[in-house]
Amino acid sequence: MESPQYKQLRRAYSFDEVAIVPGDITVNPDQTNIDLTIENYTFSLPIIASAMDAVTDVNFAVLVSKMGGLAVLHLEGVQTRYENPGEVLTRIAQASQSEVTGLMQEIYASPIKDNLIGERIQEIKKQGGTCAVSVTPANTKRFVPILAEAGADILFVQSTVTTARHTSKSYRGLIFSELRDMVSMPVAVGNCVSYSACLEIMRTGISAVLVGVGPGAACTTREVLGVGVPQVTATIDCAAARDQYCRETGRYVPIITDGGFRRGGDVCKALAAGADAVMLGSIFAQSKEAPGLGYHWGMAHPHPALPRGTRIKVGTTGTLEHILFGPASVTDGSQNIVGAIRTAMGVCGATTIREMHQAEMVIAPAITTEGKSWQKAQSGS
Image (cartoon, rainbow, N blue to C red; front, side, top):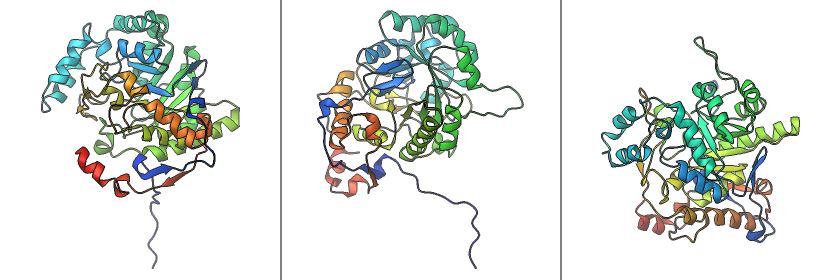
């Protein structure tokens, strides 16, 4: 007798399991265009610094902006809870592994101060930076008037899993189409990992979608909740939704792959899988300018009842300029990310990121099985 079919599982792929096939023609890397456009804002780099306290503070946001990228300030983190966030970040960095989660739960229990939201935004703007800010859906309606008055440029509405429809008997969820009527600034929404959810979110009129649930270096959502989709598959599925929505409306909504990046090759694979940009956390946390002092932790780590993150030690490997533009002083691909993107596009014959979406990809064995075992052993990782 044949066994009855209850669930059909499909294979999903992470960065380590795929490779990009070189193109039939090549182009000069210096002649590639890697711009990212979110409505009326265009950035010369398709790279966004994540809205995590260990990555983005006011100074880091300004620096990334001046280098051509975008950094997102977490409006529900230590920057808006404390007048002296630097001292708080030092306490987190110096805490032992056994006490850090409890310490974070205590630190993040302090209330958010509305006046600090406006002050942080204005500090970024006064220094000439583009100001992107992140809030959770639960606090969006409360904070929107404050951040709009302070002059924020782009709003990111982020949660572990975001959908266009939320069912609750106790409260009315955030309606993205109504949010679009409330604010004039671009609104990016995330995170999601499926074709259908991404398509529905785009149909609400938002400006960009963040893709990724569970892959981040400091995130334990997949371990705690069992929820998530490997990033290559998630990106491919959401890119398909973007293209379908564009066929329906003529409006192109960029997707931003968020989380799971360790090196430049991962970034290139995300772009080949269909991403218009990437959001980086742990890679940027390794920069000398990052406020985490060599540590990194997820936004869900300090949850009062169910922490879904862990503080990790990433170390400090170089300046932000080294990480973005080189020259690289390490061989693991975590520096000169922009050079990696342009070179990969060049060997694939892609002059734009949209052309890079057409690059062929193949399922590939883990790189350590293809003659790289000595590199693996000597790196100690």
